[in-house]
Image (cartoon, rainbow, N blue to C red; front, side, top):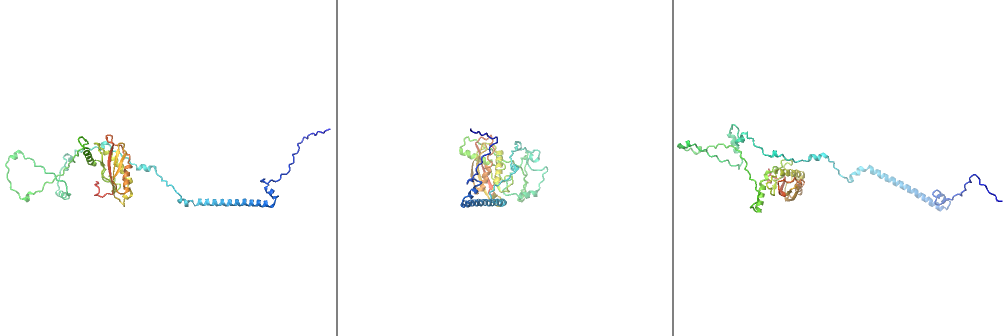
Length: 366
């Protein structure tokens, strides 16, 4: 009869596993695995350990050397900073440039009109400069006549004597004995200085009817030359006194037909802008103590919208710096204000002459 085993109520104990032999690839027991082998693998293991320790030492010393070099560079950076490339930065105050900007203001039309003379003055009534009770100082008059320059204007012709009344003309003239020549040369009465109005210049006529093209150009050039003195400020040292006679602009020339339009206020503004820009470009060679001399003449045209066109040198100074300063005075002012609306031409031709330290006999500058 077979026996049936009744299972126990307690869990059976876990099976006992045999001890694991050390593996060569086990990272925890690889040394013990090699230790049970031959002596030759043990020497290899010791060599590998020594190599690992030497690498750690090399890494430590290299790290120490690199950190030491970095510390030296940080401490000595101010000394080597001057050898490094630097970028120059200029600090500009926002209000500095605004103070230098100049605005040209045209005078009101009522102030440009010629004021009427004050007729309540005695000198304006009879156009003779004298007081209420004139007194003649002969010695002072003699000194003035002696000190007069050569080539003074001729004295006005003596006025004819007034006609005698009819009653005196009917009388019989009584002959008188002739006086000796010494007594006949009596001193002439002193001449009274009189104010004379300047001669009225005729306005140029721009009509070309019945006139050839060559003659029309000649008449236009004559009219432009005659109107040079109409525009104040185009001669002399510009009335500013900023350069102490080191730079001057010569007469302004209009090279095209003005069609009878008054360009006075417009040319005043053009001259003002060109002078300001030219003064800022004058090179140091034209200043003291070098005082380099030169003369530059430039032709250009101003279109209807104020743009500059057709610039060219007529006469150069021979110095590039002086020529560029004069050229830049015009280009820096571009664009100019538009031409007057009453001018029907396409452009206005101008010629500017720039003088650097001119002699008195070099240019007729007033």
